[in-house]
Length: 224
Ligand SMILES: O=P(O)(O)OC[C@H]1O[C@@H](O)[C@H](O)[C@@H](O)[C@@H]1O
Image (cartoon, rainbow, N blue to C red; front, top):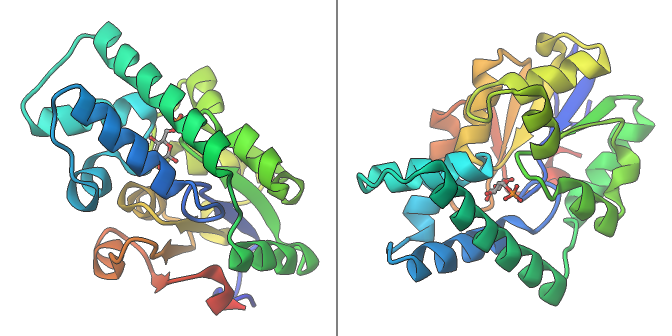
């Protein structure tokens, strides 16, 4: 059913890059922020490897550590705030769209009676879900805000996905993870989920497989 193996009862969706076209906006905002701070930043390598899919401050620390730069908590927070102001401005200027294939997939999942949760590292997930109208498909949401409240480890740790499966009352082996980030498919693999779908939005199908995807698609409509 829906391109999934038998026994899957719940679907755990990442947001940016899986359901909405916001991954590229985050990448652009990170590039401008780091470069304004004096750190050259390449989206195809640095964003994908160190920042994509991770919680805001984990991404900053991870990228700067790759340059052997280690800043204080307050500096990391400051950079994160600059980037967040920028990403919100870009989102408001450019608008946000849900991918048509993802919307169709969510509708099919609802009709098939599969449970659905959103699992995003972003603190802006609730707003993006509402603006695109896809909040109505989600029975649970474990986002950056919930992660901080509960003190969960961020992706690539599996904790946020495990929390979502628990909230839906489904064992990990009966849940499928949908992710476009390397840190995200890694989290799906680390949590022993029943199936990990890699969504290839950045020409990295092979890397998604290597980091834990069972299957890689360019768009969720391929699974319908
Ligand atoms: O800064 P936010 O909105 O809380 O988002 C945190 C991260 O959320 C992830 O979904 C994005 O892939 C990252 O690019 C982003 O940095």
